[in-house]
Image 1 (cartoon, rainbow, N blue to C red):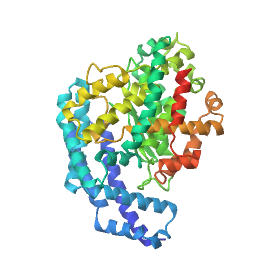
Image 2: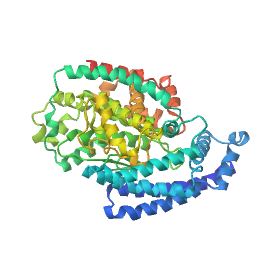
Image 3: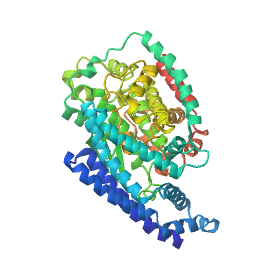
Length: 496
């Protein structure tokens, strides 16, 4: 037993308790809290964030970390303890460069920003959101000056926060290869006979969607003894520990696919968090290893499994019986064609697999322009529309369908969006490998998802943040991230 590590654990427990309390308030703000509560609750979050900051950034914690990072001390730690020490040191190195008062104010700002964004989205009023968004961006630019390393751009630093080791240099090549594949395939789709999916716009009662959505989450393995499904303006997942994981969706009465695939997507995130080892949860490494790997799990379930015909074979009757009036004249094959229809649309979360990464590329390029001081916040709507026209051939008619559609920037999550495209590539690479080891199609047709879920738990989920994305991919597939698997997947699926 290392006495220094045992002492450090007491600080970890305090940080975790404060972090969990803050997360619970954020969850409440996004789901059940009355609108009038947001401002006061945001103030409370600011105060708790200050307590969290001082629990992490204090002389004794940093002294203990310095001791535990020494060679002799390292030899007395097991692999889990080493991972905890290294991750904690890295996390504290990020926030200690930001003054405590500014850190608190930013947490309060982003907490309040979510409700301001939601109202602006509902009323199609970007101008009401602009001052808040600009304040978030200017604060992040100031934080970047505190943190950026010599020779590093602000945006590369932010990308690294979400996916370690990825910079604009790698991502430009990554997105370039995707663009070269998607644009010709999208052109071919337009030449094919159009898919009629008018069924999706019929009436689907919200209570029936909620009923089927709960079944669907359980079907893929989401454990409601350890999880919750609620409704929010923008679907998301929030975990407090591996025995309390919460996901949300948004029900639209004239869009059945929206809740179905957001639930499968968020359940994929939820399964990741539920699969973390008990020994790691409630520690600095008790979460998914990166945003890219996290998105790979949600996209794996949503697309690799959820949009395949095999997935729906055993549960088609249940879906059809749940919505008898709206789906009575729809066949399974029509439904499969509909959920895989490739056509440019305005909303990222409703987009098809083929065009999805183009949506991400728009956001990636806009974020880079903002932090390279090439674009002002007030000009975001126009720049957004120009890039949608350039990459997808469509122009959003409103800001609600354009620049206001995502929650992420309200939370200060600049640098996050590329993780979605990285996640798509990781998911394709994992599926390619798993398909050689497991009878994937047969298992899905039998309704037996357990072996697939167990493979991911054993190889990805249980390790939390103790390995990087590329370390995991090397151990599982024998090579680091390789975008060619994703390109091959899209080419095969949409070239047929």
